[in-house]
Amino acid sequence: MKNNKILKLSDLLRKKMKKPAGQWQVWCKRPKTLAEKEMVIIGAILTQNTNWKNVNYALDNLKKADCLRLKSIFALGKENMPRLAELIRPAGFFNSKSKYLFEISKFFVEHGGVSTVARGELGTLREKLLSLRGVGPETADSILLYALGKPIFVIDEYTRRICLKYGISEEKDYHTLQKLFMENLPKEFGLFQDFHAFIVLAGQNKKNTDVF
Image (cartoon, rainbow, N blue to C red; front, side, top):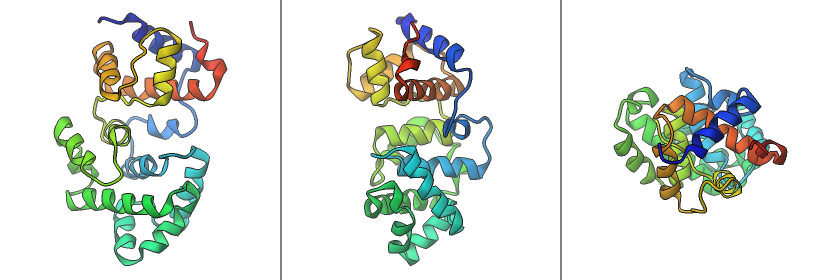
């Protein structure tokens, strides 16, 4: 492996934090129930451009409306899109995100559900997810990694910052940085899940980034 700093960072973050906390307790849970996988997919859309506190409010609204599953979101979207938008209002950009939620729920429902979709090949699945409205690389890879158990590393702003801080890379391009991480880590989706979660938690708490 070329960049030992990446593997060292993974090991040190794990030693420092022990296990993922907050939302990551569910996102990094192995194995997950079908309901938990679907909640990750929903959360991956809702968390765009907002914080997890706001996402939790939206998830609570969906739960109270008995709409925290992909089939129920798909059904509600077909029947009453404004209602779906109102339920997720706390997550912000609710008119756009309701459309994104509908599209991704439609994709999974029409392709046989999460378990069936998860059997697909990583590259093909990624292309299909990226073709959906509102799904960019970070969202697609979050779904692939945390919901479908595919070994692909998620890059976000916290990753870019910690790489710069510890001299791992000044690269900002998503795919270049993703390739760097995947070339320098064992190809294990569980490790990818935990490491990315630790990076985010470290980025949210400045003290946690002082690992070297």
